[in-house]
Image 1 (tube, rainbow, N blue to C red):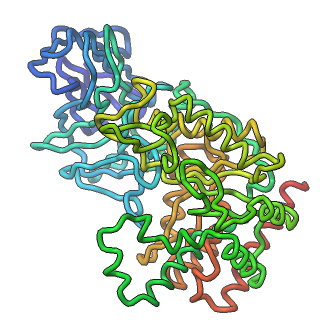
Image 2 (image 1 turned 90 degrees about the horizontal axis):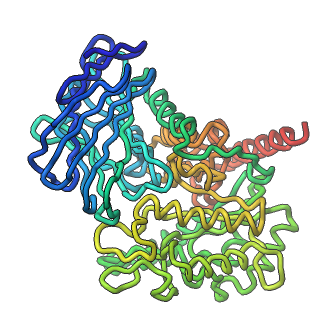
Image 3 (image 1 turned 90 degrees about the vertical axis):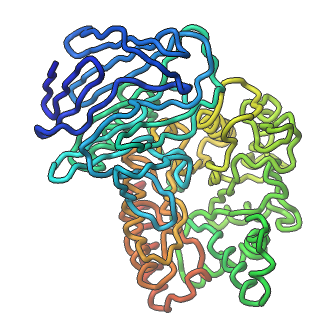
Length: 553
């Protein structure tokens, strides 16, 4: 049966449905979705329920019944799957072994530093998991040679049900599937509805992504709270990580045997010199460097590792003898102070506050009542103006992707896993921080609508690539953040400057077009001339003046 809409047509039949765009068949979707490798699945009935709704019912070797529903809306196709019976869903192969006429696909994610708009052939499987943007948009965008329209295929999940950690495209034997995994953390007794698949067509990648995001907001899949930024959130910002890294490179230059010494050692040990540089003395030098270069900033971000232990979130007094005094001094100079936080790391925490694997604590557990109590106390100490507290102004939340993944995890609250567990952790940071200090600024690298409500500022993530494509990274990453979280979301351009003069200056000259300037160091850009620094100074000053005007008008 052919259903015609303004922008596409759908041909629905006993075994699936075809998407037709610009008069050409794009996908031949097999209606069956495999859950836990169930075999011998047989379609028992196919029914045209209403004008735009179709339903298939089947049985398999594992599930008593499966119900597939296709709703054909004006702009989208919504495909859903319900399983009936008893069991624990594991690997899910959506629309398993579907056929296609598409030529390739665009992955809206960042899997490698400097990588821009990765595009793959249909014959290449792809992992869309938790990398630089955590989580990324859970969708793929397909193109077809000589057809002006492109097609989006994404995962659509209800609040509280993101108990998975990836959404992959899988190619095999000239067919494709869309894959995720619940790792058997979800128990089914009766009926369970999987996350749905949303399919739509558009004129370009941004068009598809906006439709994907808007569907979440309009149809209640997530909250679109109104963002009311405080003036200081607009920066300009200074983050010390770049100049901390300079301390590491200086060590490399001095130590002839440095390369031999780091072989096989963990990342934390390799970059120990950079971590050691997160101290009061170095940050005073950094701020003085900004002053010498006449760089206007309104906030400083103290980066990795000001903490004595990542999990306890207490300042290392060997590096920061009196962090409260340093922060108060910054405040007296008109500077706010954000603290970098390494999410998930359980250094210094007891087992009862952690996710366990094979009896060992591996990450913090945001469902643990004891960890929640600790976090409440820790964030109060970090943000409060009370005596004995640090009086900081917000957090840069990092390493969201380094989290408990896979099978065999012991999590306090059963059934909570993956992206849902990340949402729990970020929600704790966000809610507790706002209760203590309403203007506390929380920045994340989450590029999915589900995380808008726990994100004040979207950070583009680090870029130091020698590939000289900083502008393209600024453009592509900003597009992902604003299409997913809304055009009103603040964007931290996050030190988006390169390893060579031309790329760096291109980044400085364009950063304010995309978001908030964020200088990652002065020593980091030692290759810039005095005239270059005068130009950077002017860019930051003009931006600062524009923010003043915005709030004074």
